Length: 222
Image 1 (cartoon, rainbow, N blue to C red):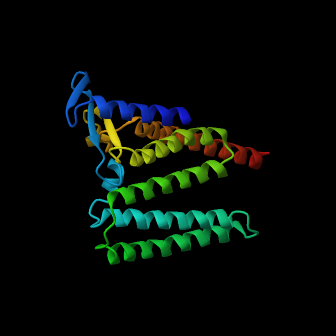
Image 2 (cartoon, rainbow, N blue to C red; image 1 turned 180 degrees about the vertical axis):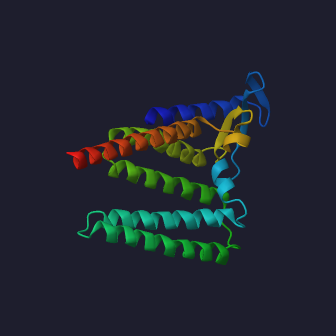
Image 3 (tube, helix red, strand yellow; image 1 turned 135 degrees about the vertical axis):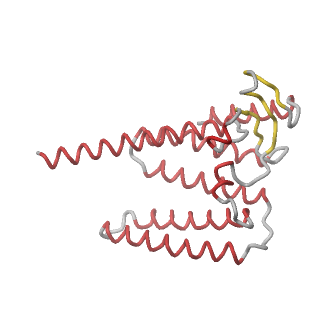
């Protein structure tokens, strides 16, 4: 985990010093190039796409993060309580529906509220680290925990970018056509770690659920 954070920090500092700004330095023909740019938004390509059409994206990020932390707090609070599982699930669904309404209202009500990109970006990344860190803490499956490590490293690496010049996320890897097909624009080592971790997490969840299903079928048939 620390190795990913270190490599990400080192590469960002090197390219920010040596590469020309907003100019392609081709590595593999015209398909892969180094292209130094700074992330001017609070979210990555996928996040911007999801919140496309929202008036004040920065406010939306803050509101969604607060809602996510509230929902996470409920999960951490209720998981060890002596309550029937069905009531825990119904309580979670009810809380989610209430939060959905509150989020819509808050985003509309505070649409003219001034929140800087830096603040929204930092809050978003801290929230992501807390949520994925909680998943790491709650999970007992080794594969799932292992796949969460690069995701946590990515969040920490991009969070640190806000605390040194230029105080924005430094992106520098460009793959032609990646944005059109996968909504992946210019990215960095931390982003790459996140994408790989996300793929590994999906595979780990499939393996975990398949194993659980197999055990259930075995118990029912025995």
